[in-house]
Every structure is written in structure tokens, then in C-alpha cells.
Length: 142
Image 1 (tube, rainbow, N blue to C red):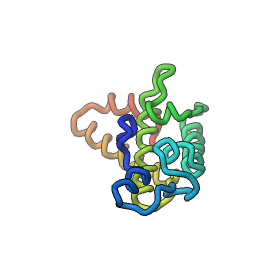
Image 2: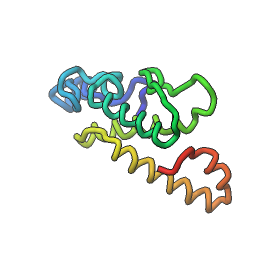
Image 3: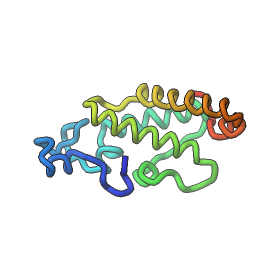
């Protein structure tokens, strides 16, 4: 998902290209589907990010606040946010793929994708004998 370059295929762009009839949000059907709306301000996306924050807290005991800037470019303040930023990227991917498949983003979809990535990276780390790097990255097992 190319959020930083503003080339994500929202319904606004797809309507201009004649691919869809409406530029209204695929999730809430209330507002124009701008990038900011799709990944953050839409009530459906907000529910997803609230569930994400709760999931993060349950696994790390860290309370996080996420702004639009944090979602778009990552959490820049403080140290040790690499795994959080990785999870945010996975979350944005879930939102975009749910949009493409006409589904609402859910914590369950996020957890399934994160778990798949965990097991893939674990396999690669075992194969390459670099488990110490793997364990340093993953704060918790999904």
C-alpha cells in the first residue's frame, strides 16, 4: 500500500478511472474515500485501530495512542518502536486488503496475518540460524 506517495487506489481514484461508480467509502458508505479516511478517520477503521491498541496492550502492557501521522509514517517518538511500526504496517495492509475484498477490517484478520508472518519469519530464522535476531524483533507471539 503506497500511502506515503498518495497512490493508493481509493474509490476517488477508481471513480476517476471509471472502475467504480462511486467515490464513497467502501466501509462506512458515508464519506468520500480519501486515503486518510480509509485508513484512519472512517468509523470502521477507527474501530479496527481501537481493537489494535487493545490487542497491543494485552500483549505488551503498553498503552499506545495512534494519530493519523503515526498510522501513515509510523511512531517516530521514543526508541524501540520497530515492532509496533511493523504491526501498524500489517494493520494498514489488512485494511487495504479488506477494502479490495469488500470486507470490514477486523482484529481477527490482523491476528491471522500477523501469525502467518510470525511463522514465516521463524522458519527463515531457524533455517539461517539467526533466532536471536528473530526473538529481538518479536515482542510477543501472536
